[in-house]
Amino acid sequence: AMLAQSIGVDVIVTNAELMSVLLQFIVLFSATDAATLIPTQLLPGTPTRIIGPATLNRVQLASVAGGGRPAVVLADSIPCGPSCLELLVPANTSAGTYDLLQTYSTASGATTSKKVEVVGMPLVCVVELIKPIFKPAETLQGRIVCFSDALVPAAKGTAIQVEIIDPNDIKIARTDHMLDAFGI
Image (cartoon, rainbow, N blue to C red; front, side):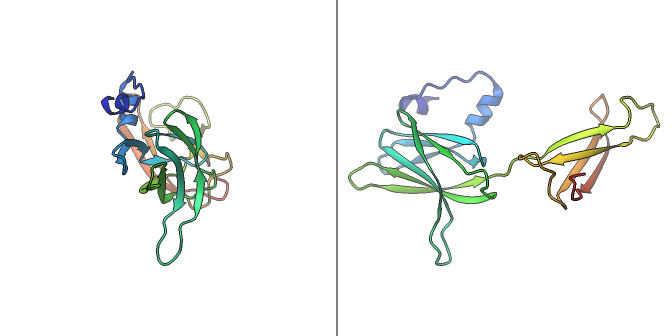
């Protein structure tokens, strides 16, 4: 909070969840010794705000250059307020490691780079049982249907783990399962 206040951003922590989100940020020091707050993980299709000094004028997400191939810029930032830029990672960006390039409006036009992870969206699963209540010793019968973030059936061969937990939070069973072409 002290760091954020020193660069002109008010931070109010209201609960433990928000604190854990704030702790996932990286603090990067640029050539101007001003701090830039960058998340360690980015989600495709979700805007991310990057807080930095007034000299931060551009942030780009690029593929990692290497093996003689140049980096390809996948996303470019837009201003969203004083000392704030918003970066929208394209929804079709694959999960993996990317470079986050920051350009500063200094006399030297300093550019710094930091590695960030683009993570895929989790599956959305619907559990459907053949009846609402089962008696002790009865076999549970039903199905689980999983969807991607685009609400289409999850890819064939996607591995999921199913756990059955009783009302006392005791794990009764756990099984690994591969989804079929219909996400079941």
